[in-house]
Length: 317
Image (cartoon, rainbow, N blue to C red; front, top):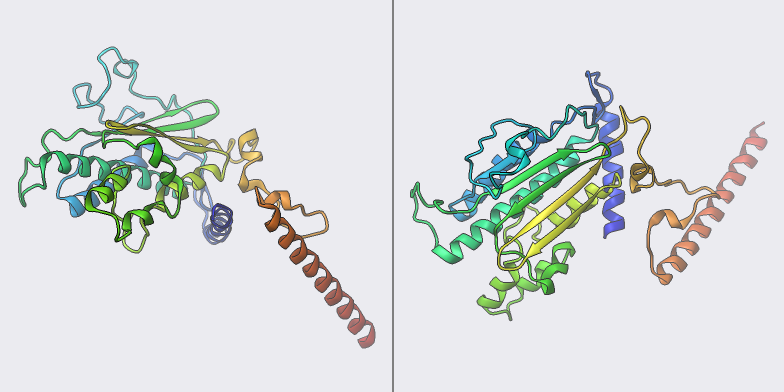
């Protein structure tokens, strides 16, 4: 599935980039923006995540976004100590531009923020009970979700931290499985077992029509498409930190860094004689055998078509 979806991401990129490239905009080439505002995207997705969280659970945690110096309040509830360097310099962008594809960043941020908000809400309700309708103070005492981002010289890093109970080591694999959530839907599971399985992440779909459990693996693929990554660090019984690393797409997509040049986005998808199956990623021996047979059959069929076309052209001539 990872190989399937990484190719789908590439196809969607090419189609949408081709369509939007027809419009000329300053600082924008198709869907690639030369100065992506990470803080603005995080705040917009945080509002949407909190809205969905309130719809599902009746309460939603505050989301603190730090990294660009906007709306920074040293007294805001967070896990930052008074001696933190953020109190002296809350702007971690360092006047650097970030060339990237904002729709990819929006998707990954929405997944991480919804996961964080939903897990905090579920943990809070387990401890304090479901909130009463119309209770304005229902979220009092709910720990906030913290999103910090920094513009490094080589990459932009985002950390989204929650206190939603964390993920046990035995359930950590489910975070990256497209089918890990299915076990929680098993009718044979008791309510307590189902809750313990769901506690590692939220139990609600990421929006209408989206299956439970697919958000995190897809968000990681969007980060890896340009050589970045998404990593989860969890403390069971406390919370989870999601670290997302994003390579800069050079300066106006020139002088691409090594991480981008060897990423899936730069792989050759041609099917000529020089094509190698290595470009498809890690495969089992049986998959390699099948694909080699299919590729050889395709090349024979194409060679026959070219020969027939050449013969018909000679006949017309």
